[in-house]
Image 1 (spheres, rainbow, N blue to C red):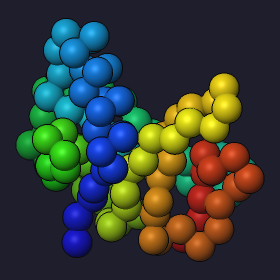
Image 2: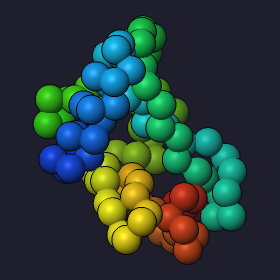
Image 3: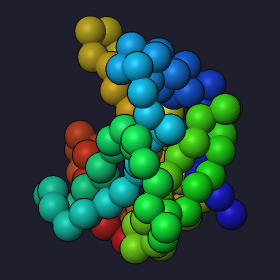
Length: 107
């Protein structure tokens, strides 16, 4: 399996990386938090760590630490707009339940 993203998510990240002026990709991870137990984390990556797992989708590098990969295997990152709201959506096949806002999940 792998980690992937939609063309809309890739386009948004490409624009953000260009505006930022540096970065090799994005880091997708999880940490204990949120109303459902686990919360997603998303940040720019300037340097890779030796233990990082790197996936490429739509020309963007997605970097994941080994501990997070267990929870994110098979996830697709999307970028959605609904009215005035926009943001990333995580289509995670490992999530058994999600909170109403989609920010946290449990496995």
